[in-house]
Amino acid sequence: MALPPLFKQRMQHFLGREAEAFFQSYEQERHYGLRINTLKWTVEEARQALPFHLTPIPWVPEGFYYREQERPAKHPYYHAGLYYIQEPSAMAPAAMIPIEPGDRVLDLCAAPGGKSTQIAARLAGQGILVSNDISAERIKALVKNLELFGVRNAIVTNETPERLADVFGAYFDKIIIDAPCSGEGMFRKNPEMVKSWETHNIESCAVMQRDILYQAARMLKPGGLMLYSTCTFAPEENEAQIGRFLSRYPQFEVEDLTMVSGFQPGRPEWVSQDELPGNIKEQLARTARLWPHHVRGEGHFLALLRKTDGEPEMYQSEQATPVPEKVLQDFRQFEKDVCVRPFEEMMDGRLVSFKQHLYVKPEGLPSLQGLRVVKSGWYLGEIKKNRFVPSQALAMGLEMADVIKTVSLSVEDETLLRYLKGETLSLQGEKGWKLVCVDRFPLGWGKQVQGILKNAYPPAWRWLT
Ligand SMILES: C[S@@+](CC[C@H](N)C(=O)[O-])C[C@H]1O[C@@H](n2cnc3c(N)ncnc32)[C@H](O)[C@@H]1O
Image (cartoon, rainbow, N blue to C red; front, side, top):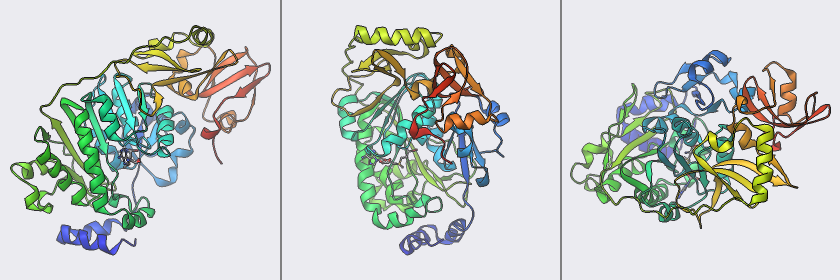
């Protein structure tokens, strides 16, 4: 493929004799990956059920290569959020930071949600995920992907890192910064990136990343871990960025990463020596690089940093405002008619309302007043004309066994595609809301009225032929 001449020149300079193998990799086929959603099923169940030729991606236990012609986005299981399609090396950052259920995690540059969905699965419904992105446009895909994955304990914000840091302070146990970058590792996946490389220059990306990193540093608890990643090869955005950060923040140090076969160490020798005082050079050698000529992936840079010292968290707890009585009454009626147990029992959270809209919001958050909050936890639905109308996010966050009335369609059933296309279905049964599932996995709602099931599958989610 036609690579920008300046890019070729730079990589030739950095890689020397190795450059040939690197350039050759652009002539080979790219690799395709999907990641199993372990919030919904196990890796073993998925491997048995999915009709794709799956081979393990070595650095992520729930990640697999598939063959291009298999097109997993065209399988009904994709609509049930049972896996996420993701470039294999992009699965490395969230796999390399040890997320534990119960952690408070910030994904600072999160859209469209590759890392956030992976983190949420690791949290297994416990703790809090704050997914943020500065782009109001890209955030729509982030919300959709979190909902599709059935994530309940996520807050989505559309903010600058600085405003977030002013509200949260040193609140998070773990932070992921999947930074905006010059995208040199995207050329094979998306040739448009070649053009954008020529316009988004490395220096301007480096300035942006530096500002994001400085704000992220404020939001990490002492003892907490921060994973910085880019999908570019430019040392200015990688080793030099981390080197500068470490010299400004001596309370941070680089932690060892799990070096999977094929991962290469960072290249401190590519950074100008005046930028690297003291032991920083040695630390940078503990960052990692994924190269397309060493692993089956497009390429990434990873640095895991620990904050060894600093001020403890100080935040103002949110004052709980009770849900208005009438809203609560209409909602509880729905809950009683449709579900086997109260929604608050399904996650560690409390019921909150914004006008007629209801959420279960994770416990333990500071007051988010003044922030642009796009999603406040698990969105349940809204009251319309004195009746509760369930949301798509509610359907996707449930299990089939949570709901009294369900319609389970098999993958082969032609009714399934008709449901996903938004058609009304002829169906007999008791009136009321029903959870429509493919096999045992929720897809969305339908409302039974006499001999038909009215389709509540959202237009933006429908199957396109
Ligand atoms: C590499 S992409 C993130 C991909 C995402 N982590 C994923 O796995 O799907 C970088 C993102 O950073 C966002 N971004 C750019 N500048 C930002 C800033 N100052 N603060 C927060 N997000 C920013 C962009 O809108 C973009 O969505």
